Image (cartoon, helix red, strand yellow):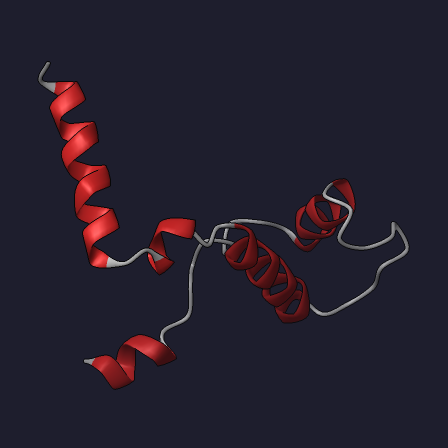
Length: 79
């Protein structure tokens, strides 16, 4: 399963037209308005920028800190 998981392609942008991909890139300041590229290149660029901006800081926390954070937030939910 692990081998196939890494080979799988995302279908997130399958419903987007090329012009919509380009508009997204321009609106978010990733490229200039005269940017011309293949669809796969635009999808890769969006994916790279999105993934870089969504890395959560808690992924680097030690286990003890993560447990303390979860304990504190769960106790607030039921207080």
